[in-house]
Each structure stands twice: as structure tokens, then as C-alpha cells.
Length: 168
Image (cartoon, rainbow, N blue to C red; front, side, top):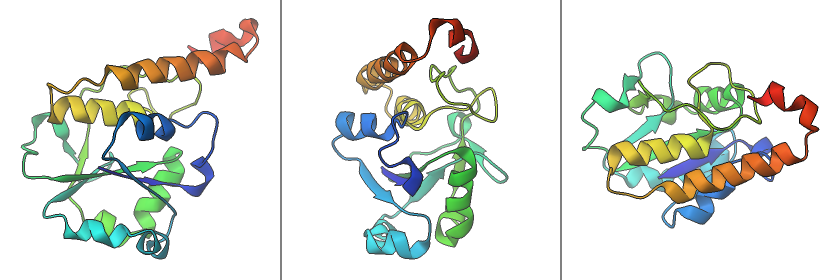
């Protein structure tokens, strides 16, 4: 699995990729926007994967839960605000050419500290955990969920209690 992270997300206090880097040993993380950014980071080595796929909703994407995804041996995940992740996709034709999937029935997001442009949008760590649950149901993703709860709780602790209703 490879995460392509927008540069503005690096070191962001509310970012969830750092959770994944601590919970998943085989995760690859590259930062950038343009194809040249990813080539310098070794992104082109993913081309050696026989069957890569992209997890990102939108036109032409298929529902992950009802698709036969056993053939895909490498998953690409975009990390950034929805607008910035879409920009990464738009600026990288090789990504746009990959088979693309979305979640038909994602769990509710516990990530109340950042806004999303829709009801069923997940933080990157939540999306990866759900993807892993679909691909490998026997895999224990509870450490990711626990780390997410800890991150949200710590962020909410810094917000005055009277404002918590805005984050529910």
C-alpha cells in the first residue's frame, strides 16, 4: 500500500497518516503533487506492481465491497483535503489510468475535528482501516481505530467545551 500525501499535510496536527506509519509496517509514503515529485520519491517503482488500484471516489470508480478486487496487489491512497487529493489525481495521469474504487457502505467517521464535503467521507487512516477490513477480514485494525480515537480526543481537549457541539 502506498500513500501519496499532499505537501501541506506533512506535520499537520490533525493528520492521520502518522497513525498509519506507526501501525502498518509495509506502508510506503511519498509526498508531492506532480509526477516529478513522485518519480523523485521512487513512485515509478510502483509501476512494477502487476495490478495496482486507486482508492478514491468519483466518476468511473467501482464499489469496493461488491467488486472482485483479489487481482489487485497494490493500493494507492491519496492524502490531503478532498480538493488537494483531487488535484493530485488530476495532475498525475498515471494515477487517473488506474482502476478506481470507492466505498459503497463506509462506516461512520469518528474524525470530527476536520470537515469533509459529504456525509460518508473518511479520514485517510479510517479509509485504510476499512480497506484492510474488506481486503483482509482477519486482520486486526483495532490499533488504527484506537489511535484515531486518541488523536480526536486530544484535539477536542484543546477546544473549549462550549464549542464541542460543532464537532459532532
